[in-house]
Length: 145
Image 1: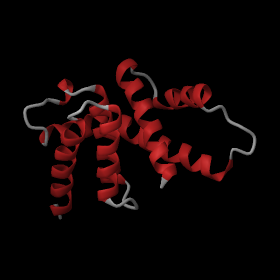
Image 2: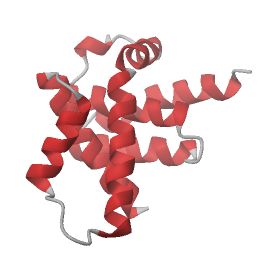
Image 3: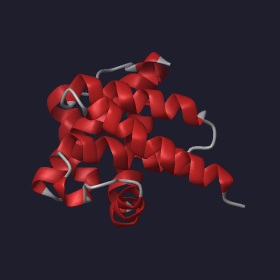
Image 4: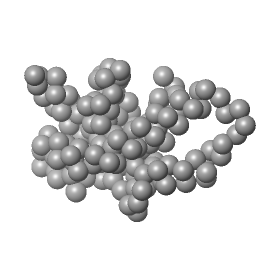
């Protein structure tokens, strides 16, 4: 699962940049790869898996951000999505997209990975904040018919 963790970290960085500057997600991904990880000959299957999963998360979260923000906002007590830190908002969008659209990934894994990203890249309260929102979102989603 190391590849998926790396892909999530990359997706977070790209989504954060998009949240700050706006733009096209495919251009943002291309720029990221060009700057941080130029394509090497024989990059290998593992590197392609990282790129593919990171791309899926960035495209899915960015293209669906309005719907995801509405959903996240329903479970965020006392915080509008616009008031959240960009890091937390990017993690929540990515994880919500993953919970709703990546059925091959166990929800607990998605939630734990999002919490870990929050602890690493967010504030001291990000992990608990992200956990509360994603747990509530997941519980409602699994209860829905």
